[in-house]
Length: 320
Ligand code: GRG
Image 1 (cartoon, helix red, strand yellow):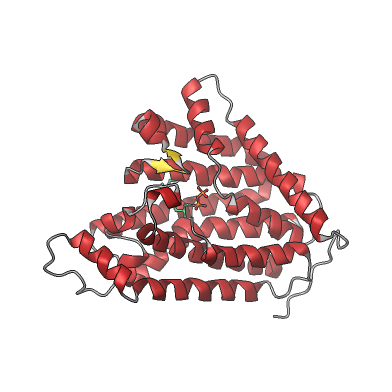
Image 2 (cartoon, protein in one colour):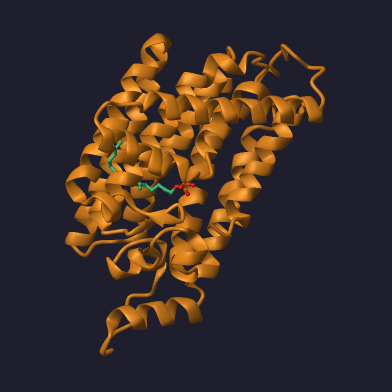
């Protein structure tokens, strides 16, 4: 790729200094999110802190921080509210997702709907989402990047429900869905970090494509784990995809796999576990990661670039 290399604002940062900076930024992120959900309405504050305090991988804000630093940004604190907004959008979406899917475990704890019921879970998701407005005000022209990703999330989730309802969960539709419901937010994270650091249009697009590929891969592996792992291993209710007739396993499966079986769901699961379906899905996920890494070849060597590459590999190596 003939993209111009960014001029690193802080090229002398060694690995230890970089790791320390990143850890501090991630700690500040936790504090910012914890503080911003304060409310005199107890249930909103308690349920928000229940889901935030349960942890989560924080992969999206991490991606934003890394893209920013790898592009030469030297003031991570300036991206803090943007990263918090990104993670709150994701958090609101999983709270709503658990309502839709009747998920009862999330991040190793009872889901918000399991603990407070559907009505309060719906309102907690809404509340987390309204807090995004409070956080993004000062980022002006960057807001459309975040808003289009959020729209994509809702569109992806809606397309998924429609595909299940209409029994048309094909491979093509599957990729369209995961591009919207998952990859769009990863794309936005990487692009926002790059733009905040002063990237050119081409550089920001390369980082955005990196994020997009990572997001696609992340969702494919999420769907594989949904079939192969238990609720305890994942910290969230597993087996939902196949039970609802969706996910990578359904999209990649051969159509005659479960004809005439007594329990079609058990049969699909057995077929998937025995066959080549998951192998092929993992192969695709790895290919997407390799393509992602090619996108950032133009970046100069730095601890942040190495961390981006590690993050890319961790997407397919993960177990939860
Ligand atoms: C309220 C913004 C908003 C959206 C509503 C319900 C919905 C529309 C969208 C749901 C989209 C969704 C759940 C996509 C799946 C994304 C995904 C892979 C979630 C799991 O992400 P991890 O593994 O979770 O990063 P942790 O817990 O580690 O943060």
